Length: 339
Length: 228
Ligand SMILES: Nc1ncnc2c1ncn2[C@@H]1O[C@H](COP(=O)(O)OP(=O)(O)OP(=O)(O)O)[C@@H](O)[C@H]1O
Ligand SMILES: [Mg+2]
Image (tube, rainbow over all chains, first blue to last red; front, side):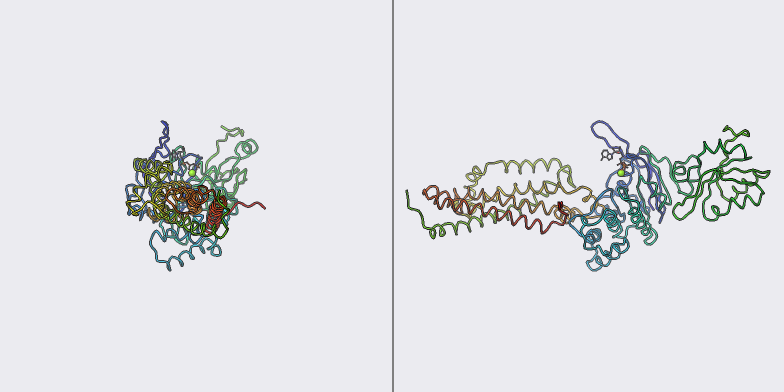
């Protein structure tokens, strides 16, 4: 569990000061993956570096599994760092050490005996799918392989949390996938709590349970991805879900329907069956005017713009809401012009 | 004008001189590395890009290193002469020459070391910091290990500089190819001895550079730029 409370960090450089973090609070529950997104300069790396204990915040608390880490020093600080695995932004492998040698570094810091070290390194390289590259030097690995070695290194000393700063930037989609798979395995097989900084929404879509949006050093949105997508006005929702293409559908179709609504459906059951069942149960004609289907992690999620015609349209909508569909009535007037 | 010295006699002269030069250069390089490496690490660690910035310590250290380095070697030779007499009991011969050579080598190698360590990518150092590594481990397994190629190069540069200094020191204190070139060659109007000594000095320097390059290649695991 990572808890960040009221974290503030200001950088001062030649008389101008930048509030990189401005009263940031967030929580990442045990064994979950939290994505931190935001535009360049929003403070994502600063947040990750504070949690990695590389940067001292001006104020606020950082707790990993309960203990506040901000004020630690000396050997206590080093011990705390061992419980936090870090995949830094950019290349960070020792170029004069093999893949195995890099993964062994945290174990050396933790004074693990050589024999144990070797078997643990082999285990980790296996986990990231690089068992055959153990004696290869970083300059002879591909970017994606290097990044996976960095993840293996971060996991070597069995940390309870893993921080990854832009682990997939500058990688193509296929390679991105291999790195994300490794992060996901860290969570599912090792139970590690993961915080991943990214500007790539595909990363959030693939592996994040939770997401925090940073803007100018402030958290402007934070919660479970599956909750946020159904919240009206959520940036995460509007970025991750299919477009419903409001303007054109309004003009084309709203006139013919008694009710036009935007429906967000989460999960297999809802996505598969809710709309047809509502239609047949209430005898209403239901047409899909826009939107589509997507997948967030393992969960199918749909966002449709639907038009309902028939006497019991209202009841059908109410029934869907009772079954956890997120319904937002489109502002439509009878003559088909947006109110 | 003397007769031309026979080759066998030239050989008699330059053989021990070569050994003396090698002895002076290698011994003072050894002292230079043993003393300069920790000093260079300290210099780097206390700098503003180091792990433990200490501006005051850094400035004092830097001043000591650079002032020593900027003393012309000839001046150092003379000044250190009395100190040498104290340490070695004599101020002549190649053993005595090692003292001023070592005094020149230590700050020289320290500055080269600190420059080499500064080139290690801070992202790599930080990554090691996040593993909970202590300062000593970071110096050893990250800074020195990652800068190994530059450090071997620095040893080479130091050796080469010391060949020149040793010739100078030898000419004054006696001993080595420098002394042979000046005393037995130039002063004795013996061109053959002079040129042979100079050529041998050149070959020594060239050989040491080759050796340095070879060792560098051996220890460096980074990929070289290719041009096929
Ligand atoms: N060491 C520093 N000194 C001065 N200013 C800094 C420093 N580190 C970060 N900043 C400033 O703090 C702000 C946040 O930087 P940060 O690196 O956290 O952004 P980011 O969200 O990670 O951006 P990116 O997506 O480009 O990596 C920026 O305005 C940056 O200029
Ligand atoms: Mg960043």
